Image (cartoon, rainbow, N blue to C red; front, top):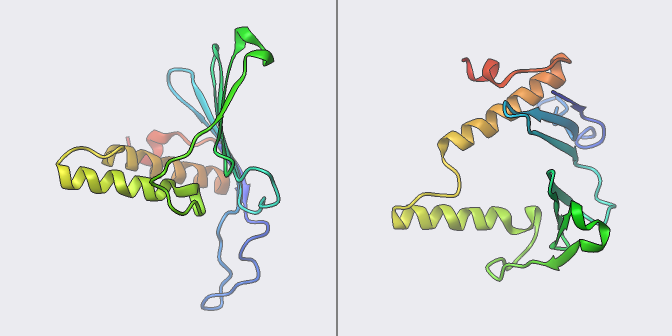
Length: 157
């Protein structure tokens, strides 16, 4: 399920007499069959913040967080409370320029190139790509139609 739209970006642009319709903010919730949930809080006009990207994973044991562009990675175990939170800065020397997406696109290309040259497998496969696109389609449909969209509906199952 998702809520979002276009509020700021590209509204002053025109192509062939039409304003681009690019969503620049959204809240997306994904519920998995096993009971896990994921959420995306997207805002493409929040440049005036300390962290451009914040990723966290929360479970019954604790929480792991990653922040960009600071490259900080934090882990905290629930049993240890705030005093048990550890933090480190993680960098990758293969990234010469940490621009958009903080070099992750470059690293993904390196992984794909190594897989093609070495006959191995990339970090993701076609099925992973299909599911990521299907999730995006489901989120857009949810925004457009104001309802929960099941992934099977998008995949035609």
